[in-house]
Image (cartoon, rainbow, N blue to C red; front, side, top):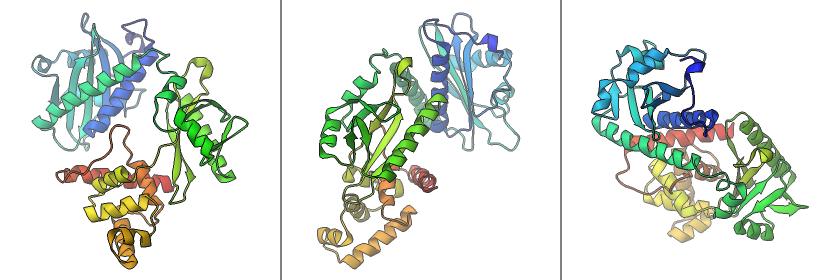
Length: 379
């Protein structure tokens, strides 16, 4: 599609904002469907023409023709379903997604309302496993939820997304800072944390850590976050503030929503450790039995092996054997890495839960993701 064919349908909404929203949706769909590439575009119901489009996992220098996109949008399948599996021999789909002969062959096409005058259409592939009817029904609901949620966030007024307002709404200690770590705003939990002077404190209005090593990590995380914001990568960074098992603490640093004149604003959150919820998430991800989950919970509370033994009526030697066995299952070799797994399995939505019927396939996938993240954290 030529650049001059990509025009915004609503002049009030900047084209870049709409394209960014489409890209975010496409990346979420890739993760949901376990596919490699995604083509997403908005379609005018009045004219039947594509308005704006993004391609994820594809070479942006090669654009498909408008005719191919129009043929996809006019498919008869849309008359009976809003989501359907695509035949691997489908020429337009292959052109839109760029499939090589040795690649998997399963793809999915979806269409859902995107506004009063337009629809959102996406094509995602290629997946190794075929899509079952049950999966397609679930994916259809999930795609609608993802897009609706994304729309609700993007349509909020800018003052609703101000860093100051956001900080006040957070339950954890949170700070809005500038590029020099100067505190601009903090919530009540943040004030209480600073009164304790651990693990952070104020020095002439600047947030500082407990030692020079942590301060250097904080500075590097700040530089990385600002750089990612300028590149629209929107990364966030983790900084360990204390590795003491009995007082483990870390900070999440990310770009904060702000007006153009305050683009150096960042958001710092100090999550509070929840050993019970953390042990449940780790146990669910790695398939640990209840006895081992209890040991992980006590380790996250900072209990030494002797203390764990007293809690569970076990000898210290037995507890150490249990810990070694658990670490082997988790693929870690230091006890501090239990806290890293706590962070890496932390969900932004809901706490993990114990469920005997938790699908083995999903457990294995979660385990691989956590171990892979841990390896990257070590590197």
